[in-house]
Length: 407
Ligand code: NIG
Ligand code: FE
Image (tube, rainbow, N blue to C red):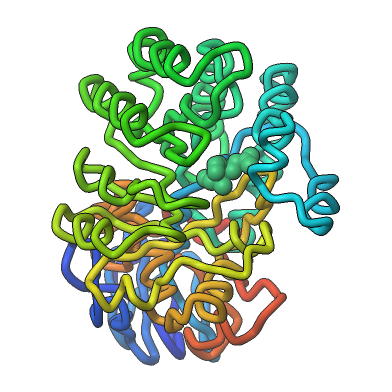
């Protein structure tokens, strides 16, 4: 009998997410390709075999009777690296100040930029490791991480280099996004700063990131400015992503389609025409229900309608000092209770479709032979428990690249 590194057997539900290797849409999002009483064999960091009643000698055997086995969660939108915190803004938000009120007063992103510019590399690394540890404990095995708290070449590069370092030293895999256009520094006009991003930043950071993002929003960057930045990013090999229509509909969704973005994120206020254009161009909608939750907006992106129209949806935490969430189980809960996504849709959106939103679906996001062994064992009888059992960490075991991290 062949020997493997890890054998998980008897899972009440083994969610394979097996299916077409492209973003899942409509009813496909509801199909988790579940194997009941499932087994999975892991060898050399990869999935060696998957099925029912697999027979292998194994260094480690995990009896998953009464448990659910899933792919590791993928978090495709985070602002992982930042210094300090903004807990005092919660009281301001409770008093009725909006996100934009706080930003215009020089708080919000600007507060965090000041803190991040002052912070040493070691300090930023140790703060970020804490967050990555929390993510991993709660089942996130891969994340995207943006720069954007530098707003100058030096600090933006510092953040992107830290992403790279964190990817090397921490089990969670990290893909980087350049978000130099996260806010307009006070000493420039928006147009002046856009020129700096285009002429001075993108050419210098191009090898440190995979994606280029813009905060396209009323009173931040216009569609025209965003387009200039994203097109320049493309010339330097950076695939576009967009913070679109988070607070005001500025036609960010249509811009995502026009520039061929891999994803457009937030989409809380997007219009139907923009969503249709995204569908036509194959842009993924990344929804971030943690953001309206922490902003107390009482309004969420219309996931139900977007899915029914045929837009592939991914979910992400948007982890940042305004929305400090590392736990994708909580995001799945918000998606079900506040955006009317089904449990299965929210799980597809947090695994396979999330992997598509960062271009990693060949490697991760589903449990299929030959794919990277990023696997979770959850202490629950089935996937319906993930949104149902609120406020605890259901993740019992994390396997990352075939290595047992937490038992
Ligand atoms: O996606 N909206 C812009 N960026 C982040 C928030 C960043 C911050 O407030 O520090 C977001 O919500
Ligand atoms: Fe964001």
